[in-house]
Image (cartoon, one colour):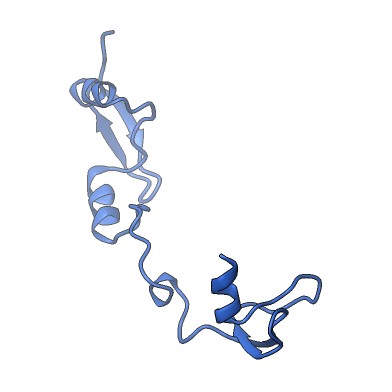
Length: 105
């Protein structure tokens, strides 16, 4: 398949950029099916900023939540001891303390 240079528009800055025939051929070899959405400077800025969903999830606090998790009081359905859980019990399902939860796994 013969490729020809294309002019594309960056979704971030709105500027036009060239998607050359050689780049298109390289994209095809890599198995990419979509054309690039960003110009090279915006693509580099996005990579440097960490916005790309690379699979590095991080800890609870690193994912946009600040401070410790809100905990709720409950009574263990197995042993009857008080328990702290990271969700608000609804009452329609049993809640277990950490000891009983570990035994049930």
